Image (cartoon, rainbow, N blue to C red):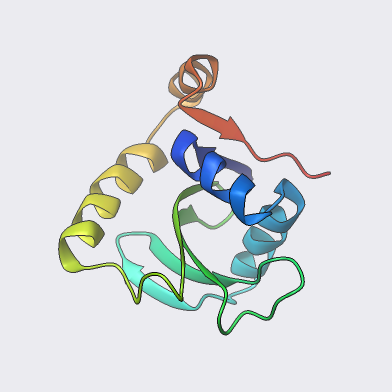
Length: 123
């Protein structure tokens, strides 16, 4: 299982204090079926606690995910700043997520080299 984050998500997660260790744990939960919302098209919403806080009022993360294959952290938002994503945003996440999940090894390596994606490392 390989786990990646987009450039935008990497910046956002850093500001929120979400480390690779936390993100790795999120995917581990998802692999066991702990998913907060299946948005269709291999796109999922997951609640993630900020350091020192509970999940209920914390952050929401949008992940493109295929069990045992790949996961891509694409977007995140604080629950107190945004209630949810809208239908147009979901449509975009499904398109982008589908593209990312279809990347072969060469495409992944190219995206990593260009800095478009970063790999989540299990600390």
